[in-house]
Image (cartoon, rainbow, N blue to C red; front, side, top):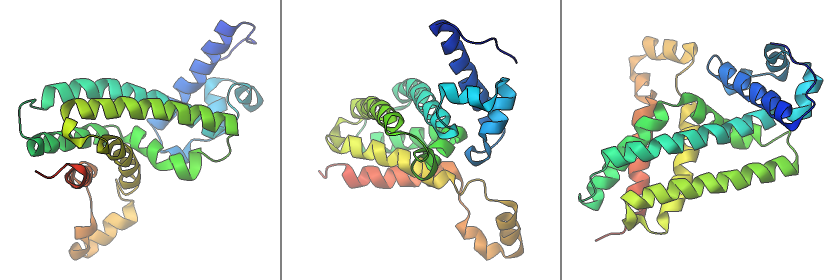
Length: 221
């Protein structure tokens, strides 16, 4: 892919979109840690200096992708919750259904979880204050949307809904770092089966985490 010099806002937006789309395609092939600015530039057909005209760093590209992926996931989650939660069921039942749907939905979006896992320790470094503020504003908007969705199906959570949503996203990022295990860990489990108790499937781990959190913030009868 090669480009002429962008001379209008429309052309600049096309260039930005191409960079984001290329980075998204790379994340389908490799973890966040392996996405480099050099390889991104090569794949998009621009000099690295030109990519930096649109995004100040690799981390800025990935932060914007995190917001794009999160927005897309929340749109799909709304339909999943509407279809999977019984509106007239007891709060404990709806809480279990919510935990099941969230864990299944997030476990199926490995790239999103990987980005969450890298957010605090990697992606929010090597970016300017302005980029951080823009990202955090978007994050607040997405958090509010998720909170509204959860409250719609489990209003009993009340003010605890926002904290639950925030901790759910943090948990998804943290737990995804252990799945799948590297070959050395799998080999250790194979040599000593007793160690296998430490093995986690992401969906199961998320469901336990979400269920525990919901029971913790759900008001007692």
